[in-house]
Image 1: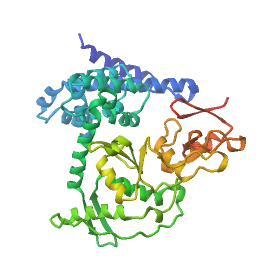
Image 2 (image 1 turned 135 degrees about the horizontal axis):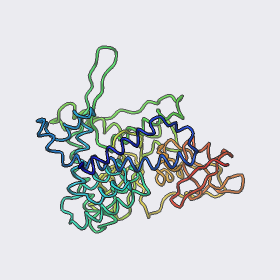
Image 3 (image 1 turned 90 degrees about the vertical axis):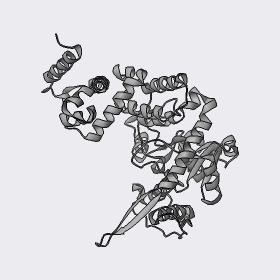
Length: 423
């Protein structure tokens, strides 16, 4: 008698073979939506079953002298080795540590991408947390899978201790960021190599804060809505005085110093005032010696979707000499509600909306806020005011859609905008 898992794989394969020639073009719009969402759930269940088997497949590696089951999987199924190794790591995490997450994947309540985000976030929590706090963090993040995708989950995960253990959150995060900043300082380097063909190759490694600043400045030129802008020149800067560093490391720190010396006022303007770097922190965080802050800048960089966090001490330093805007939440700031005195949203309002919205507010859209346009929820020509709470950021595509009579739009309690074609 065959094992139930083996029987299940055979049944799934036979079921798919029965629809191999079926043409989905004849499905109705409602049926397509149902099929796609159901297939996504089934994919998650199949992925969980595959990972469950992979977690106990060490004997396969032994049978072929492979290093581990991941290497065997890469050879047997012809997938990338790094992907197979990542699958093995996730499989072992679900099998040994995160049973709740594994159960959600098994029922299709979470998908593979969400599981990867959650396991990475849980693994990065302080090692001295109690089992109860870790279990609460896992259960909370799994519960959010019904509403949030991987990108939003990554942001929520960064603040999970504030939910399940608020008394531990600030100090734990500050200690982690202090260690990361020290490591980033040690790793920072830049190398230039002439290739002999009229070009010079630049390779480097920079702290996230400096890289965010660079990307934000570059987006002033690369923003597709400003394709015809001509670049301006900027002032030079001195290098790092620590002569004991290797030359690439000295270049890397010099590059960071250059970014801090550049005057954002000389860069092209886009998205209202998007070459301004902002750091958000509360008044208590600003005063604390062990606290954290978030950098708001360019968000269209490949890699992790996690927000860029720094220590409050680094934020205070940048506020002194790097021409950033420290946004102290709960303190007094610029007047943002302009009522009927101004037709267009001003630079201060753009900055506030970028802080609030982060991306285009159309549901599911990830276009960064620096590439968006401010939209009046209450049309100006119908008496609407240019007020922050009645403005929303939309990318060019969705800004056109919200004014298109073919679409009905609705704002959700979360602030996101949904679109439906009128029938």
